[in-house]
Length: 171
Image 1 (cartoon, rainbow, N blue to C red):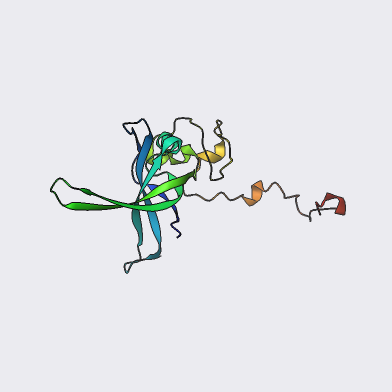
Image 2: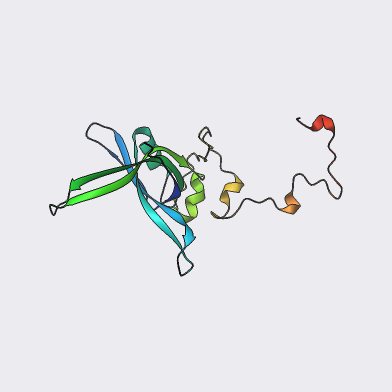
């Protein structure tokens, strides 16, 4: 049997870290995941998917993600049920995160949430180390693409072609 989920979306609110009675960290959060198509009015719609992270991952999510943060979740669907206050059975479905990737620098979200505090920023690569320095590149608009302007092209040698010898090639 296969039960695998991969999501990329934005948090709908700040995650809240809690601990079980036995001291295990748990964070529940909701990801807004855009659908691949538009509705009849030409608008994009989103699904709001409940997620849960446990232990160290829960602490990292609560410490480094905020409302509007772009995150990737790799996990599995889990269903459950409980008896509601009115005595009726309530059914739940959530994604249990096996891995959560922080897909943008922490301060890239500052315009939306005002929460940039100089904390380390983590990228989408698993082995990327925290970046404690703020660069001027991170101060651009959140949805702006990172294109090199032609007048800033580091490979431009002026008006002529780039000279490359066979010794310069890695193959």
